[in-house]
Image 1: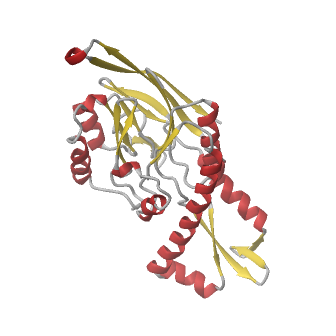
Image 2: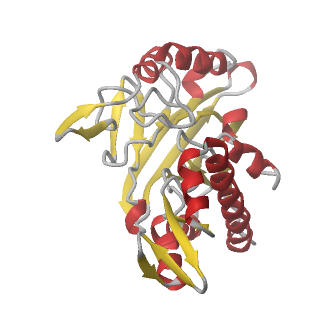
Length: 308
């Protein structure tokens, strides 16, 4: 790795197997040192299919297994199958049954993806860092940990002498997703992590929500483009000035920006179309001196946003 670290940052895959495979392929193609999956890994959209004998129906329209599989693998639209209209109705009315049905599917999805991951990363040198996001059920962390994958939320990860601190929690959204916190609670949660850092300026903040009032957090709400990012995350970046901020969450705002000396990045997401959005980032390290006079200096050498 030497004095440069090359990072491929991808976020908001939302269960698209096509995009997941593309991310693994891109990490190999670009010869990166780190592939960082920034959150919202598993499916969040579900299609409810009713089985009648050997036929499958979606809203009274018969569909084939090939159609279902293609839609799922490309866009992450997860199929849930029901044996009767009563069972389908229970999914709508029984919250516990709904949760169990969704988690059963997601556990199977992760089992399948780990096989893909192990196959595609065999004999590769890059390290993959996984983190969850607000649309990932809390149980996803333990599902990944069963395979020995340490979720970044719970770890401080060293990247070429920098420390990465991560969080998939976001400020409140209109959709009441799994990992949302009021700004004040989010502030306390993140501060608990940041205050453990010896040199926050030599850190990477891998926070799923983008900072408020930047090029990274513009969403279309009621036909108006407005800033929807986290004020807490902006405040903490302003205060601690980490080297780099890695963000996602707002799919329609792929961009880079600066807050003081901090470079911030959101690759965006087009997962529903099976398109990989990514940020290819190179960090340079300079080391000078000797003994107690030894000094390290870091810079974000380049950031390239791409899709394919």
